[in-house]
Length: 314
Image (cartoon, rainbow, N blue to C red; front, side):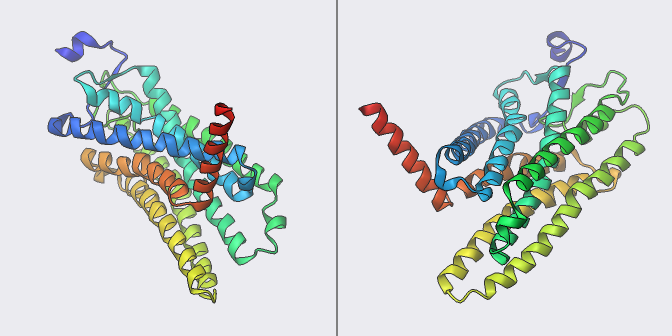
């Protein structure tokens, strides 16, 4: 009755975690705090990378790209999720749902490719430092970054359009906390094997291929690290690689478990849990790794804040 009276026929209903209503308040507090931290971390990286000349390197060019991506990635879903967790109204407009679907697909595929580029960048910096300025010159890095953003947003336009055009025959209750492609396809009143097969193929290309390249590159990086004579330097490099691999595994394996699978194995509850990892937890961990765990970024942030403080107090 509430759905019929309070929402228009074009709106979607996001069930979210309503089947576990006792979880909604704790999740609201948890995700609000995590989202604020992600905003602070990612915005800090972007500002410091732009303002501090010591971080004006191609490594931090890709890091700032990732921070901008994660900032948009979390913002595309978390505010709406927090709004739905706050009370009984769990409505999202048709236009909002389409925009959320398009942006989330585009940013997710962009992150998958960008993570692979960043790992390749680390490999060149560690294993071929003398050739690094030639292989990873500024023009090439800009082209790689721009090509990733443009191609993945174009791919998302095609995929989201095909998803939205699937007949739903009035079905508008989505058993998810955002407008996720598989959850929307579950509303279809027609054969969706073509859509699911296309999604599996794209998932393999955008997830399995980059992950395979990343694992291969990290094997080469591990060999180079083991040849470092200094124990302290070797441990520092190893620690950095482990933290990066943790985030990479969380992102790729949870996304692969969703988008490279037989259609019949999809579960709503499992889909929500996996989406929390690759859509929210991983971007937040990226902000943690590249701010609180990065000495260069922390030093540059302290320097920038100190400089701004002295300018304002004069």
